[in-house]
Length: 132
Image (cartoon, rainbow, N blue to C red):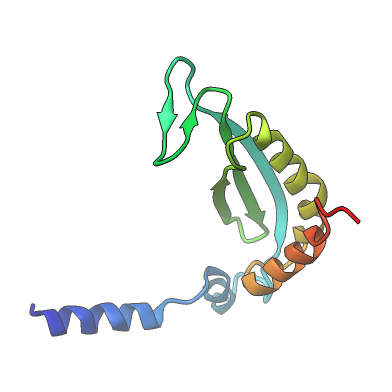
């Protein structure tokens, strides 16, 4: 296979890809709409006794991140992870924001429309941390 054939096959495969909810809608056994039914979070910490670095910062066991699981009524679970800077304990703040502010607006929504979800989340957090 030469380069042109390879990229032709890869391009055709990419053109066939759709959102997983759209693929599920094509199957008659699924509803016409996919919906988010739940959101769970877990806090992860670096193992104690070892220091981790990126190009600029030093991280220790006091730092961590948040793992998110998004469940749907189609039986599909989406995963994400995030950190909240270098402040020790900041992952707890992130968890509170996700669970108390974002979860109510996400549950019941169709995950096949990520731009709409992002706009809704942006609107929910628009004035967070802003002082008048």
